[in-house]
Length: 373
Ligand SMILES: Cc1ncc(COP(=O)(O)O)c(C=O)c1O
Image: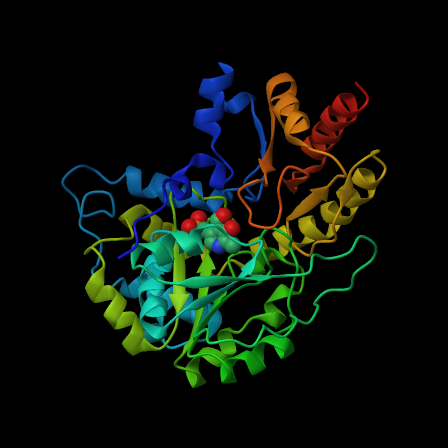
């Protein structure tokens, strides 16, 4: 078994480290504008608070999702997710965020053979594979070129090799590239296990039409992962789900701890997973703020924003952006995602999460001031 390399656990491998940064800067987390993690900035929806308040106001001694052990079968939550996507509830497994599900998925991937991971890519896949000593190789992706790109784009064909499991992120993280379903479908013929992480897909305008969810029922070697932590801005509460062959999910359920999804997250998920009005609102925000921010970032000297279909985008420069990122943090309390931990990127890259208009302006002001120093 391979040990987890220590740097896989370092906070720099993920954005959103508000507590740690506030401690370092000697300020409050509320003083920070966090554009390093890509959560919906105007969430969570009011209905999340309503569900939580209803749970918290249950009198002591009465059954409630706070007091009692969660349902081991997670039946109500699985039914709600299944109804939203028109699936069989047996094909749905909720998790403590998508990240928990990657751990079990990686056990299957490691058993299937070597994994192929598009790079630069999300650091949690190697973390999960390392749990099981799973071998993987990097597949360097061409980055989207500045200028107008119409989404979705076809995913280029993977390199020929002996890899058994393929991990796709759609839209891709950190680029925000949206891959077309038509280009992903043929990959099901080539790999023993195909994983499609659709954590950000519900946020992408018209993104759902590229989902591979409709193919799961006919392909037992396809696993689709979803997350509600970004869409609903409940990264602290944590909720995600896998959609896959029921036999595979029963196996995972036997491996994990008995109550991986807490009662409050389940109660919120049951009510919110089918909230199409929220999803439409989020997509309208991405459709409006994405191009607006891109256009203004293009006007800043020395920074090139790459096209993105998602609620985050990559910034490229010809020189190191390490100092700029640190100055934004120290002088303006604005956090951008350091990209040095992404294989194939480095000091000349930053990732920016879309904000609401007011905070996008704050972000631009801070960038303008630091660039003109
Ligand atoms: C592509 C991708 N998938 C999954 C996750 C993890 O989601 P969750 O918070 O549900 O564990 C992230 C978090 O940043 C991500 O970027």
